[in-house]
Image (cartoon, rainbow, N blue to C red; front, side):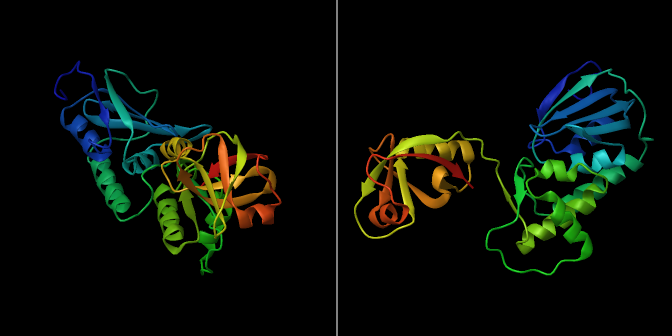
Length: 267
């Protein structure tokens, strides 16, 4: 398919990594635009006669062009792509030639040495109850700027590979953690006493728990919104519309059977 001048190519970077994909298009002498779209960023790479002449990555108002854009795309592990033949670039940011595959090989090697979540939509945050770590000035500057931001947003800046290495270090040291952004609406449940020893655990119907688990795809806890309390949450059969709390927690939180409590899962 790559050798057909008018062919249209589609796929996913999970099966066809970006450096290999660009190399194949170059080897086939293609002219056109390679478009890459993830939920959090979009990339474009333009080729003319098998030479890469322009690359751009954008997310919101942030963007990178040229070699920095190639560096970023080389680290993207999964995203749909499509190649559109004979689409010409708006301008030139790369000179083509052997410099592009050399740059991609260097970037690919750098990414392979790092351990970042493959989902760049994960949000970075300071861990609760984290241990003290000693950081250099550059790592401290990055740490002060990234909390609450998606990984893609942090990486979409000059010095992509340097930032990726710093994030890798911060995550490995436990100075940062990456968690999925939870966009699950709160639910109002009626309180149901659970008799027995223990505390700190909330129970919801197993169907609701499964729905949350499918949406979040990560371990999560339960926040009782009006009370500002976060608890471990477990599924329990046959309690639809109910929130089960142990007796000790009922006394501590001054709640009674039948009280309505708004809850939301969080990671």
